[in-house]
Image 1 (cartoon, one colour):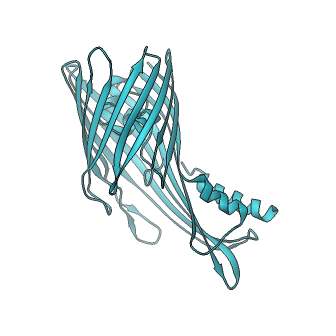
Image 2: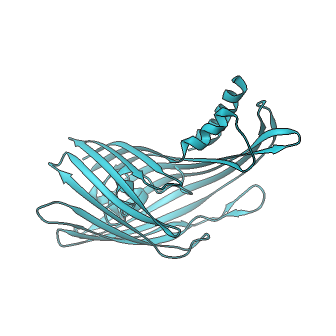
Image 3: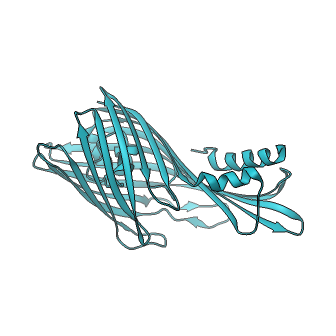
Amino acid sequence: MIKRFHSFVISLLLVLIVGQLCHAAALGGGARAIGMGGAYTAVADDGAAAYWNPAGITQVKFGLMPTVGVQGKFGEIAKVMQGDLVDNFEGSLSLNAGVGLTFRHFAFNMFSDLNGHVDGHVAQSGNYQHQTMDAINQVALSLAKEFTGLFAVGVNAKYVSYENLTKKLGLDGNSYGSDENKGAGFAVDLGAMAKVGKLVRVGAVLKDYPLAKVKLDDGQVYELPTRVAVGGAVKVPLLGTLVAVDLEKPFKGEEKDFRYRLGVEQPILGLIFLRAGGYQAEEKFNLTAGFGLKLGPAVLDTAAALDKENPVYQATLGLKF
């Protein structure tokens, strides 16, 4: 039992230790945005604005946003705790976290995405685990400018680091080899947002455009997931319902087809917010749901992406003025 628990702790630490919000498998940052399916390019008016569209920070007088999210099935990781390693066993868990301070024309944010994977095999020498962790960490300085109250532009200047760690561990807790590969570089996000009347907003953003290659220790280059997104949002008169849609085009990676995201938010008395949405992932359309509570400047948001294979759970606690 002690060996099993020790193995589980090692596995969990491998997944959860923060070198610092991840972008690989995660849907994004901020629970309000996740609850709306990630359709946030033309919304981006809270502490997570810089993540989605740096031009959006012009809508925030002051914002403080710590956020955390997990993706994966906890039951699969629990198998590691039980020590039941068999052929073709796999367990994955991702963590994204972020914290940021936002003013109307300036913001500072740190985001980190960690993706952990465990697989077990049976060999003649006994059971062992392969454990891998990818960590993508970003430190972003945001600047934005609003013109005539109708049009705004913004930029994120980002320091990006990438690290990959692979370990082979026995159930006795001993390591049978490890490999670490890491590198760092610089990138920018460029965003714009415009108001069309009092009820409609449109936005566009170029994300993760590299300024310098992220060269790894082994000589390979990690390619940032550069992509462009455009979106629109409309607030329904009288009801106050917010409806948003995004269209995203990736330029790097295996997926290069257009992807779309939809979201809706319904306020109740300005205190409670109900959210629903959906996003395209590969050939599937996954639904999302969210709940928000606002008491003065204090905001609590929770959200879930209802993907059977890789569910996402996100929570954000912050201040917004």
